[in-house]
Length: 269
Image 1 (cartoon, rainbow, N blue to C red):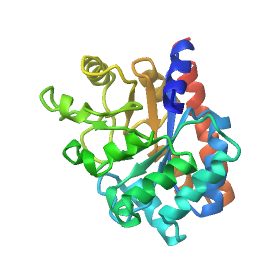
Image 2: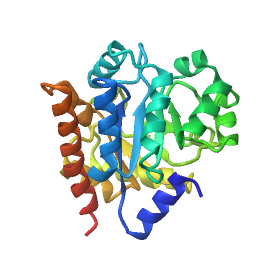
Image 3: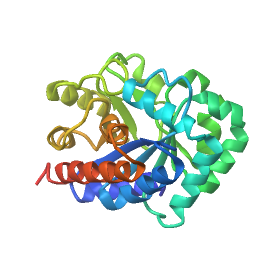
Image 4: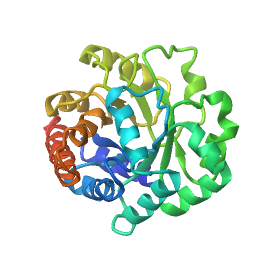
């Protein structure tokens, strides 16, 4: 089984949801970002999403847009992001790591080269938010052929007619964007999340992770009662934005991760 399959199977046996954390590679700089990445599993992250910096992150709100700007200002690029994954894997062979971002940097890097380098580095999955299933041949199918999961986003506006198309060929888990809009903008009611998870499970046997707008341990715990995974991104990225130094950014992200993990792990007790 893949790392993602193994992790979600283990957590199902433990009767708890996964804490899925998002940070942008190279934010606030390479060394601090690598320290955050290496520290997240011990702080309680079960799955890590690592953002690939891009100049035009159209699906992201202000927090992650600024994270992209900080990362690019520190000269982060896709080659350095893959190097970061390689360095992470020298000390961690079990935590699933998913790269998240946009197709442009991958296209510029070269799809075949990217897939080969990502697999060799230890990448387990991809979330590419601007590549719909009509373009599966461009990246999804080659990535899956190489053993890299391709994780789809579904939203409140993805109706039952569209869902089978979106989910076709999906692997790893399904990421449900719980609010219509950009990252960090508002949050959905628990009733809405429950209805969405129930509907998604009629269409897929993959684990369902819920994201967008989750900021506190209490909120994460409530979502963890309903879904297989809880995704937190903007709240962690905001710790970097307000930190007075790169060292304090590392501490801020890992401290919040521990608090969120406690909420998720205690939610079904």
